[in-house]
Length: 455
Image 1 (cartoon, rainbow, N blue to C red):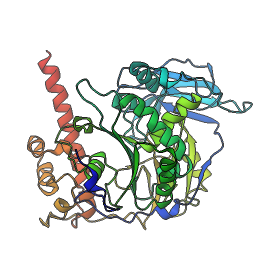
Image 2: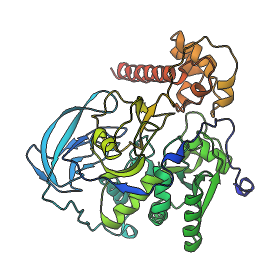
Image 3: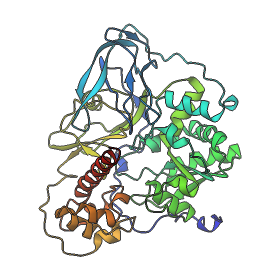
Image 4: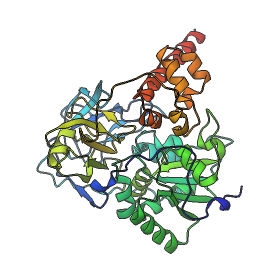
C-alpha cells in the first residue's frame, strides 16, 4: 500500500467534521504540576470497559504505593493499584462519575510516609514472549487514557490471522480545552517514543506514526527532534486542526487514506491506534515498574480560578482537585469530566478521578447556554458534519419515534458519539443524546436475544 502520496505537507485530514473554538489557551503553555497527596482516596473497581477488578485487600490492611489492591476480573479487565501508602478503611459502594454507586476500595493516606514509589524490577521486555508481555500490561492496570478506558492488553493482543502493519499513536487531542496529551508530548517525549518501540517489539509494524494536530507546534517540534535523533522507523505527522480528528477512524483516514469498514475495527485493516498517555505509561512501567496509579488531567474553563495541567493520583476527589486549582468562580454552570463535546456532566464534585478522566471542565454561562429546541428544518448541516457519513437528521426522527431497529439498519451502531451533529444543529436538537439511548436499547436487546437463544 502506497501512503506517500498523502504526506504532501501539513494538510492531512478527513472529510466532514467541525471547527469549534479550541480554547486551549487556558492551559496549553502550563507545565504539568503535582498536587499534594490527599487524606483519602476512593478507587472504583470498575474503571474500564469490561469486567470490574476483584478486590484482593481487606478492611484494615496496610498497603504500599503501587501495590495491587484488585486483580483482573477476567481477560477484558485490568488490575488496580494503591495510589498511596496507607490503610484500607472500607470496601463498599460510593458514587461515581456515571451517577451510579460503584463498589470501591477506600484508602486513608499514611501521612508519616514519604509516599515515594519504590521502583520494582520488571523483566526486560526483550526477553519476554507475547503472552508474558500481555500479562504484564494487564497487571500494570493500563487502559486507554484518551477517555474510552479500554484495557490496553486486549487491544495489544492481535487476533489470530490478523497483523499490525501500521502502529499509530494518537496525539491529536481534538477536544476543546484539553491539553494534557499536549503537555505529555512536550515533557515526556522520550518516554512516549520509547513506549512505541517497546510495543512495536511485539507487534512488528512496518511503520509507526505519531499523529499530532497543527495547533500543538511545541509538541510537534519536540517529537520530530527525538524521532530524528533516534533514526527510527517512525514519522511524526501534522494533521489539520479539526474535530473529531482524534477519533481513530478519522486519523487512519487522514494518514493512510483508508476507511475502517462499518462494524469493523482498525485491526481489520492492519492498523493499531493507541493514545499518547497509554504509551507513555507503558514505557514508565517497563522502566520503573510503576503501574497506572496517576495520570495528567487538564483542569480548565472560564469558571475555574487557576486552570492547570495536574498529575493526579487516581481516586482523588474532584472537589480536592478543584480546590487545588483555586476553587470555582461565581456563575459556574457545569462541571464536566472530559471535553465539552463528549464529556460527562457531573451532578456532584464528590466523585473520584478514575483512569479515563482526561479533564475537568468548570464552565460558566459564557460556554454553556440552555437553548430552546425546535423542529428539524431538514437543513442538512448534521449530514455535512458527520465524519462517518451517517444521516443524523433521519436517525434523530427515528429516535423520536422509538424506531430502534430502523436506526440499526441505518448504521447507528457505527456512531461514536462525537456530537458534531448536535453542535451544528440550528434547532438545538439533542441528537447525540438520543443516539446514546437508542444504542443502549439495541445492546440490551442483543444481550436478551443471546440469553434467549442459549436457553
